[in-house]
Length: 160
Image (tube, rainbow, N blue to C red; front, side, top):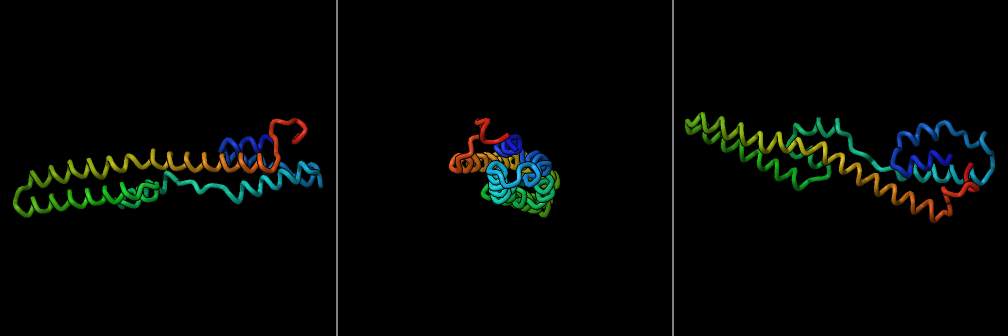
């Protein structure tokens, strides 16, 4: 049980799920305060689990210019990048309509590379940063909860 709580405090929630599934608190020590404390802590963890962002979903959303940035928690940058993409395409179209094909090709190519592709390269680190921040906030709240409830993970008497 202690291992499961340490995993939750470390932010390794998938491993916490695997370990806590192995623990059958009813069979382990039915009616004991240790089992009750672990059940209460598990319920708190499940009720306050952070909603983490998916790198795959962010990649799929990156084809819509502001959507991926908004998903990654950067709405302002998403709107700015969408405006940059739109102005780059507008410049390319205006140049093409004026007969300046090389300028149109270069402005769209270089502009979209700078705005669109480089902007989408920022998505994966932004999702990682969002997830790290959400896990750190969760870990802080969990540590507060455990300390206010009187759980001492370092005491050999609290949990076998």
